[in-house]
Length: 212
Image (cartoon, rainbow, N blue to C red; front, side, top):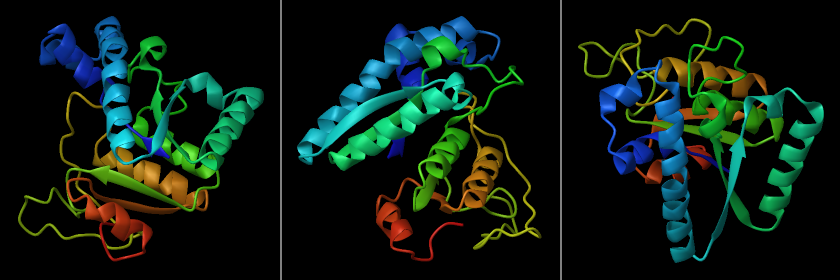
């Protein structure tokens, strides 16, 4: 399974909206409009790439209420299992067009794709979860700062100084750490690593020493 962001950013470019406007959490409708315009671009890109590899992917858009209703959650997990039994890779994202794209709602089951991926992984009894980011691992402080050290294995004594995250996303390292703890408590082997090195995906699921 692949949990992917990018719809809002792609839609912003297609609609010609300014980055600072879309990044403002108060402009919920603008973000939803961007998500609507960008989701098709995102899936078209994935579909093209998967076809080149002779693989099939499918879009799965999730809302908060899918985790609150036992019936809907059962439908979701059953559909994911069926897709994978057919050799199809689910491309999962929150349905941002109807769910607000806002961090201001304190009743959200998940606030970003990191937590969404952790909940899906734990709920579907996944073997492993790779949380891909723009740095090599979780460090004790932002990796560009002097004295920053990679945290190989997270434990209760681990401490991190968190830097700023991208205003276009709703994640960041704090989100990935929180999500990793959720999935690990759900019995899923979890790694936070850089997505820039494509070999990391193979290395992570082979159990190599990469990331955190």
